Length: 435
Ligand SMILES: *[C@@H]1O[C@H](CO)[C@@H](O)[C@H](O)[C@H]1NC(C)=O
Ligand SMILES: *[C@@H]1O[C@H](CO)[C@@H](O)[C@H](O)[C@H]1NC(C)=O
Ligand SMILES: *[C@@H]1O[C@H](CO)[C@@H](O)[C@H](O)[C@H]1NC(C)=O
Ligand SMILES: *[C@@H]1O[C@H](CO)[C@@H](O)[C@H](O)[C@H]1NC(C)=O
Image (cartoon, rainbow, N blue to C red):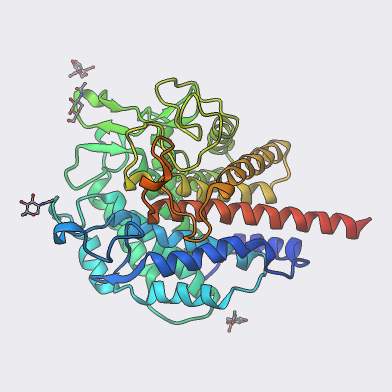
């Protein structure tokens, strides 16, 4: 059930890329993907996919038999592989056999009936392994619609992932969206905080569902949430076009959390670009473009919050894997920048089909930024055990943990880098052919 828009877009890419006929550009990312499956993927736990947290830990249970997992991360990590799959597919490259098998292995494990019972239940206890987060459920829903798109392209009849993604979207809208603080959806079942990530994810899911069904009810909802995000919520800082974390439902909604996490600057972008196209209104696209400029040109002015890719003032290098605070080295945040890379990829795709000068400038920014990050990370990576460091420059490598989160984030970076290289090489080829 692809809509026209998507067919046109995919065919364009197939045409520009038809000259590429080898696998070379993606060798590093597909290798790393295989290594992640070998070293971190545990199969399912209670019907959900599970990536163990670090190289040396056991699958499923950590010390003291507590559940050793990041529930939300198990929901979004599959997306890393779906992005890689999509880039290969768009470029008409052969999908390596082992990679095909890994994708299959990943999705066959999912028990949708069990997932539905858990994901649509709003009375989860804080101390259980699933938590009360609405954002967590949305990460899963986005993975569902992404895998549905892949399954449809392969003409495979298997589990129906669309229905559950759709059901989660409806449920979040009914149970967690309201006019408190002027609009938006709550972060969790406790309903006292509205944050950027949950609303961004709701936007992203709505955008996917709109693309999948062409039903405008989804894009209307996306617009409503986006207008709130950039309007009365004051979650978008107009000075740099970066999103703060969120708003407490108290003190007239004036109690806010001002951290600007990397992933919050990414997850909304695909949705905002779709809004600008559908409503022919540049204001959404401008937020995206200005934000990408802030980040890639390092124009962020927050001395207390260095935010992006320079972890310490004394370190002039780009480092992709650290959030801004030295003490923040938890696994929870290890994937933030990888998530940012995925959505930066959607802006890059947009710049390939939009020839405006503005888009072409953004395309160059992204290419340089991704290349700089790749060039910094690649030589540092431990190629034997793939690329799994917790990137804390203050401790010797010996004490650093090899984690699934940092490894998938590096895969997100390498994947986008490989795609950029392939696209440019192909454009060069086309130029030569035209001469
Ligand atoms: C292990 O579990 C017991 C019982 O719940 C608890 O008292 C103890 O603090 C736990 N130990 C660790 C290291 O988490
Ligand atoms: C999927 O099925 C359609 C309709 O039967 C067919 O045109 C298309 O070539 C198939 N695609 C693949 C990848 O098999
Ligand atoms: C909330 O806003 C109202 C109306 O502007 C004001 O009267 C009230 O003092 C505010 N309350 C707080 C806690 O700021
Ligand atoms: C904001 O709300 C949080 C959560 O309720 C609370 O811990 C914090 O003290 C509040 N901050 C202010 C300035 O009121």
